[in-house]
Amino acid sequence: MPPFRVLVVCTGNLYRSPLAECLLRHQLLEHREVIHVSSAGTRAVAGVPAAAAVTSFLAGRGLRPCGVGSRRLTEGLVENADLVLGAAREHREAAVRLSPVRALSRAFTFREFVRLARFEDAADALDPAARFAALVQGAAARRGAVSTRMGDVDVKDPLGEPPPQVQQYLVQIEEAVERIAALVRPGRHPSSSASGRAGPGTSP
Image (cartoon, rainbow, N blue to C red; front, side, top):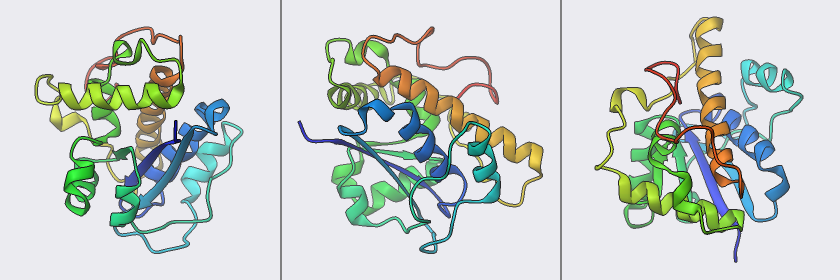
């Protein structure tokens, strides 16, 4: 089975998407041969390193930024992705505009995907790539039938925000990544359904 490719998208590819990329890579490190994670930004300037707040956040977890700097979202990147995870709805929609046929059923926001995917979608799959593919299919089929409290599925842009607010947004991403990784790992059932944890502002 070919590798499953996850593309994480934000605006500048400086805060939200590079953080999610590195955290998801780390969470699924044992499956790096079959799950490939990358990131891009809808308005990114090529080659800019991740924001200092992201570097510090990762360092606090013993990690370093991934990749060689920011890059711009392109049609080719979307076409090559099996799952597009946008920081916000605008990023999901940008991917769909670039490749409507490919991305329509494969593009979600981080928090939207967490709320739509279910452990049982992949219950019969052991291979992590197959599990991820099954989760995407389940989430796509459930979209529209399950309320995702649309006002609460975006992670806002940390750029220009005070440090406590930046930290809150980064933690939201970390929580969503942890939930996604728990769904992908074979035999590890999340403690609760992936439809959300607590109320607005605290759940992924």
